[in-house]
Image 1: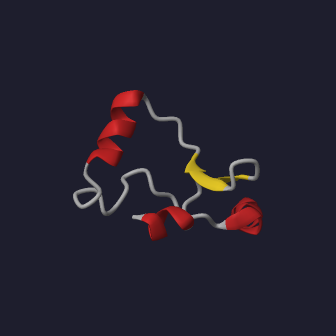
Image 2: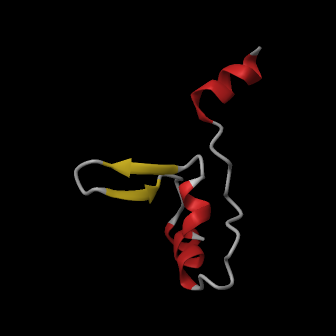
Length: 61
């Protein structure tokens, strides 16, 4: 799932801690469920491909 996170819209990088994290606002139960069994959750139901800044502009035109 780590490779999937690197291409996700919600993946954010923190310069201070030098780590990436999921910026999706999940409640405690949803987040625990997501992390509890990585084999079961090979595909994240919240995954949204990161199309970049230019992808957003393309959608607007």
